[in-house]
Length: 335
Image 1 (cartoon, rainbow, N blue to C red):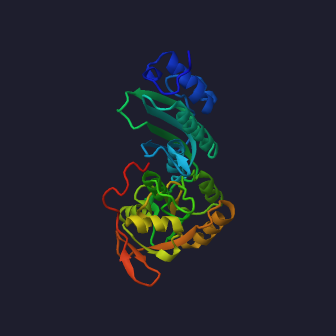
Image 2: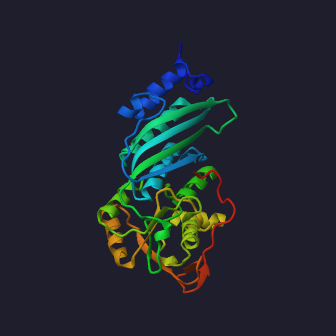
């Protein structure tokens, strides 16, 4: 009998087909001693302060330039831990798979997850697989949770202070623009790729330099506009930024002009914002340029006691305006 090329309901039924799927695909890709014990729960040894996060991924399309839903799931969860100064250690992973989903596509996604895990040293130690009838899910949904050891305590929005510098790690808007072009089938002269990437290696460098990091946040849904506005309200401060210091590639600018979007509202999946004392800002940027490949990293603004709860952006021509929190859903199913 020929082997199935698509996911069948029996792959979620708890029998032979499910055992083969888990054993020959998931276990081979995510192999580690804790997972191989095949217990109902992973037995972990956690010491000291621990960060814990969870996220679900429903991106459409599942494959895009620069990544896929699997790479996105690992990077997204690892990045949430990294933004708390936590070394990623253990992840869980739950798959909700629609009947009829191609097995070769699933293998590609799982293998990309395994490759992304290597970049942070984290391991998937437990998981779950559910198969739902055709029409009950859009191909594949993934849920991940992660825990990590906090090695830089005190990183929090509550630590932001007036006078802090605001650093942006790279150019913005790539993920949102890449997803949009994939949906619309736009053909651009140059290849636009998502910034989807694991950020732990960058954060680890900054921590190793013993810099006083006050707050960090990856600029996912809502882009840097959402991050900065959330910070002003949570810390009861104002933030001034300069547009000329915010890197935006030509392809993203073109997509924004075509659809009427603002690049600072678009989602990113490998870009983060830092608040830290002015005295440490230049050193942080230098480290990011020299050792982390963050060639566009730049100081884009400062934290102020004025206009609390507001972000003000100065244009290259000297005019100023409020950078508001994005309203509505610019692009659904972005991550």
